[in-house]
Amino acid sequence: MGSVTILTSFKDNDDPSSARTIQVKYIMVPCNAAYICILGRPALNSLGAVPSTVHLKMRYHGINVKVDTIRADNKALKR
Image (cartoon, rainbow, N blue to C red; front, side, top):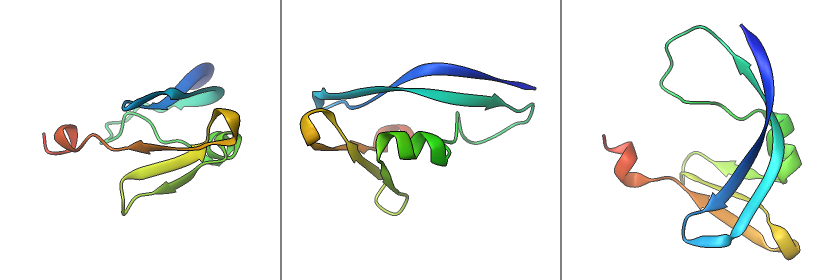
């Protein structure tokens, strides 16, 4: 168990200009999980993000005061 801080980029695959990079602290936990990672409040606050599990989207403040949207990969969800 431990933690590591990594520069992490967020972007919408349909819009390369939506890329935003912030430092995210990842905590390693030795367990089987259905998720690759779970973003906590500090990362979401740094992005100014509003996640919606119902819509499988996350909106965040992008570059140039633009609101960008990340959408779930529906093909990957059906696997």
